[in-house]
Length: 140
Length: 140
DNA sequence: TCTTGCACCTCTAGTCGCTAGAGGATGTAG
DNA sequence: CTACATCCTCTAGCGACTAGAGGTGCAAGA
Image (cartoon, rainbow over all chains, first blue to last red):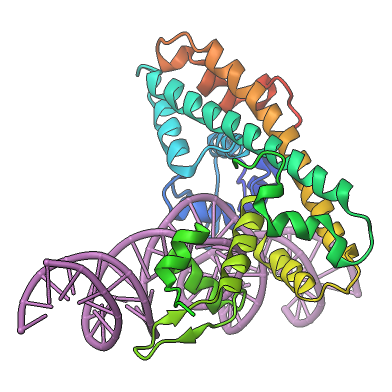
């Protein structure tokens, strides 16, 4: 069986080398075998695990949530209620974040549109920042 | 003139006490006068500055961007081109973040809907995480 | 065989924007 | 005068990495 170096694992998974070592350090990834010269040597299954972690991180799951999801994956006979709950909680977070960002977007658009490109004392960007009451939706 | 304590400033600005001290430490807020017993005593203008900072933070501007915006506010004869550029950059960031979060939302909805509430080995949440190819939009 | 040069190793410290806590001083109300 | 809240400084911690120092391993070309 061919040895997968950490660099190769990084290339194939899209997770950076120091990040892989970091994941090992926090116990998200189990420590792999080492070569003669003390270099990490990964198995194909480690690549799957790394891909799982990367995908979950891209979806914004926190490390602790990923730790739970990985435990669930390791024991497929468990109920998937936890996985479901974690994903639902994340969905709610994302929905709230989108709503909040849409409000910010409206605010920033107002600011940028109102800017007459003159001097600061007529600048709507500064003015709105200084006076929350001038916001489109003052409730953020 | 009545003295505004740090606690009062916190109450009026909505910025927490340790955060006010932190802003002073990083030079975002100038150090106020002190009372006999070494306690900070703020002026009304400090409250405006704090409100400005708070509002800008709520809109997601980074500390360094706020530092620049405050400098602009302090010198109203400057061109507001910088303020405009900062706000525009922030707007673009926010728009990108919204797009990205909408993609995540679609993904998470798929996962949660597909979950049959059975065992982990039939769970779509785990399955999709393990295999990026099963994503709705595989390009995130 | 030797050397070049990249990839690997460990370890510590830094990033951002706070937040928490220790341990002590001050200010105010009863 | 005594409680008690609020204030002070200082250090360390959070999450999820990232950067850098200082050293070792390894494969390929001269």
